[in-house]
Image (cartoon, rainbow, N blue to C red; front, side):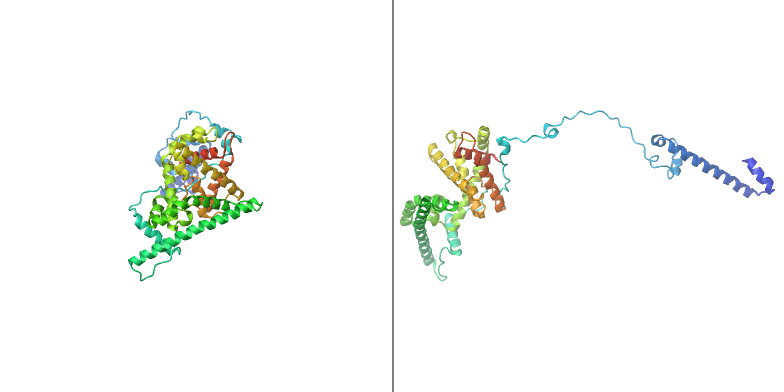
Length: 400
């Protein structure tokens, strides 16, 4: 460097001290740039790990980080020692797909999804029987079933008017039973002569008439002796009333009470139904004679459970035979495609499937009814229509 400087000094003869300082600074800056370029070329060849473990001071690192590649300025990471973990054996279901099985358990339709209604709870204040009777009469008057009393009528006149209107209502109900008798006779005559086949509505009409005919004589005795007892009978013994002699409010209350009783039976006898299902799951049916406690099954489908064991079994068998006939007619009518929402609820309640709520639509209830029909249609060997439906009832009762 001094030689190089000396040459310039010889040529330019005299150089001022400040000029000499600038020349030396320029030479020092040039040499610094050469060293930086050389250092950058070396760094590109060195791996990122060697660059990150360099021992240069922190001030030098901060001056060179802008020119270094991203891999060279990354922070140092601690070395992680990898140890082999335990091998997880794949489950058979995830490793190999299951072939389609043709067993009865696989082809059975799954239990339908219910939007359960809240469990029945005791109301804060239970109205008395007299208050309920007054409410039933007021509802019937508002719906046009009973003629309202005059506005200027006093208490005695109003009571007499309501009693007379109820007497006329029950008399019209008794006349309706006689009219139904003639209609049932016409339907049977048409079928006997080879006319149109029996529809589900006609079948239920005939069954309702038969039940009303059995209740006719005791009901007439109550009306003649003491008409005022009929509202109390509707509260405590609703099965004594013919269907044509029930006020709208009484009918709704009877249906709601029966549905609440079914839910209570399902909630209180879950272990019994689950045991029945497990014991008969391999066969797919439950013989009627093997039932030691048929009262729970009677409570699910709304059949009276009082009396001897043989009497309770007979009621249960008769009800399920009627349901079996109704299932055939429902399947012929495309699984109840034309049923209204109240008719669907009534059909499900008769089959012990009273888990529906007011939020369920008609399509959801129709899907539940279809599940019942499909399950009871496949009858295993050695079973009949009643024993198969007893098994389906055990499935319903064991469902949480």
